[in-house]
Image (cartoon, rainbow, N blue to C red; front, side, top):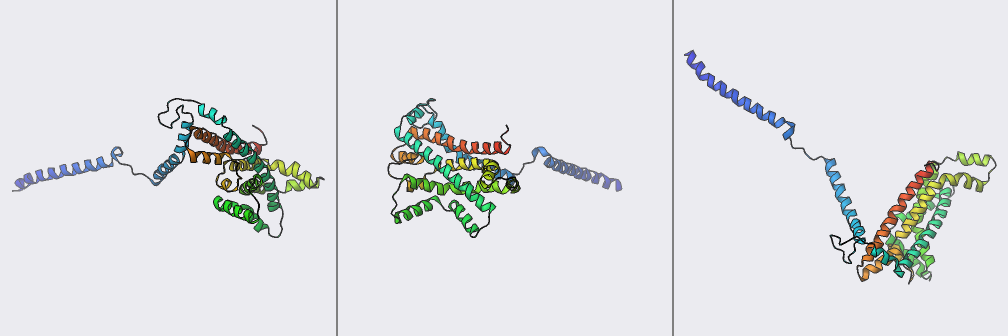
Length: 301
C-alpha cells in the first residue's frame, strides 16, 4: 500500500518540479537585460523636443541660404546648379545698394550715439547717488519691455502732435531709443565688476576726472564698450518694425527694402539679400563676443 502511494506521488512530484523549472526559466528570461524594453526618460523627451524646435526655427533659414545659390530663377528642389548670379544682380540693383548705404550709415551713427550715452549713463548709475536715480535707470531700460510696434506708434503720434515731420534725424533718434537699453545693460554689468579702488588710486596720484576716465576706467570698460557698440549696430541694421513708422518717404533700409520687394513678387534676389543679412546679423555678435574675450585677456592671443 505504501509502495503504491509512493509510485503515484512520484509522477506528481516530477510534474510539479518541471513546472517550477519552467517558471524559473521564464522569470530568468524576463530578467535578462537583452530582452528588456527601455522606457524613454523625461530628459530624452526634452532633448527630442528641443531638437524639433531648433529644426523648425532654422530650417527656413537654411532653405533661404541654399536657394540664394540656385542657378534657376524658380525656388525648387533639387537645385539645378550652383551660381552667384543672384548676388551679382543684387549689387547691380541701385535701390538695394542705396538701402545698404542707408543702413550702414544709420547703424554706425546709432552705435556711436548709443554707446556714448550708455557709457555716461552707466557711470552715473553705478558710481554716483542722486535723487531719482532708480526712476532714471528704469526709464533707460523700459524700451526693452515695450513692444516695438507700440513704441513706434507712440513716438510717431507724439511727433505728429508736435508737428515734427518725418526725417532721417527722427529715424536715428528712434534707433538710439531702441538700442540704448542694451548698451546700458552691458556697460553697467562690466562697470559693476570694476572696483572703484583703481580710479581712487589714479586720483590719489594726481590724475583729474578726465584723465582717470580715459586712462583707467575706459580701458577696463573696452570689452563692454565694443560689445555694446556691435550689438547696437546689429539691432539698428536689422530693425524693420519701428523703422516702418519712422522713416521718411524715399528712405529705405535693407529690411524695409526686403519688405517692399516681397509685396510685389518673390525674386531670387531676395534670397541673396536675406543670406547677406543672415551673415551680418550672426557674425557681428560673434565678433563682439570674441573681442570682449580678447580684451578681457588683456589683448593677448
